[in-house]
Length: 464
Image (cartoon, rainbow, N blue to C red; front, side, top):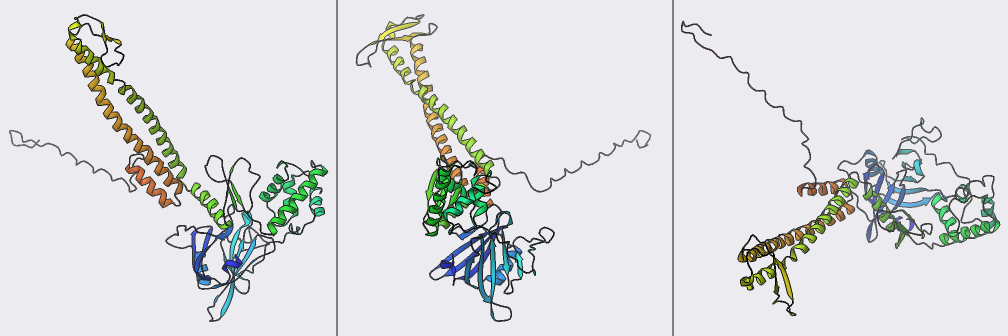
């Protein structure tokens, strides 16, 4: 990021959702988007090609970032050691008229992830997630307070670790713990996923404990650890996203191939930014509220249409066999003089058969010879009409299945609630969803007018 963004000008700042900040940065010859996310489950910072939907009214934190960062130039991007804390220094004009530096701090630390804007005195202008002293008395994150960096983790640098240090991490007093835990606790910046990958490459089960390792396994694990870190230090990256073998979302991603997922689909990308876009786009698509319900509806309707199509094709095959009915009518007509009323069947020569074989035809003894022939013609005409209807119905069902598959693909590509709303509206128009209930209050029915009493005049002139 330092190589690509330093010197760039921040043109726009967006906050498409509560956790995500987008910086539109102009560098020579192109515009780049830097995505910063402070979500506890998806905290990250990377370039992106995605264009998320922005709210009509930007949040207060976005307005603050616009005030202090837009128009500024990125002077430096620095990671604090191997901690997942990045300082993005931006030089911009101050309210007093001179150039001043402000720092956007991105802390990618799991449930403690945050994005904080500092002034040139390291005082906090604001934070994405404000943390009062009642929640953390050691590290209050509020406007006007002095910024205090997260506590430094006294762990070893994995890129400079030697064989002996790796072995010592496996035989500590906590050796009853899983080796993934031992590695994470011993080396700076090493996450559980990376630890599991090293263990997998060493050919060990993920639940292996330090105490259960024999000397040969310890040596193999140490050698794999050092080789793995050497590859990363030399920038031998292979950005990878892991997909389930039969589709249905994403599993994991990393800047190296993930051998800990053997029975899955591994897709490699030219850059880590592209890999992360693919992964988090799939995660975002999968998590849109209401999407699962629409997906279930479309799949149920597709299955219903497939069953209907199979039934229609079966009926069509039966109807096409009725073409033999015309043949039987023709043979009866040709042999009309041989038929006597009251016969139940007749055996005649099939003139349409190249072998001229005989064929036995059932007859209705209540019908005359001519009526028997006409009966077969009527059955044939009815079957022929059903063939035309069934062929039309099959074409309509085919189109319905194709339509449902198209809508399902649109649903999988939907990126926002508005996309979902459009799909929902279309399904309502096509009759797959009931129309939405009216949102206004139901009008009260007007009360029926009171019935006035009848009045009569008696013969004596009195009113009743």
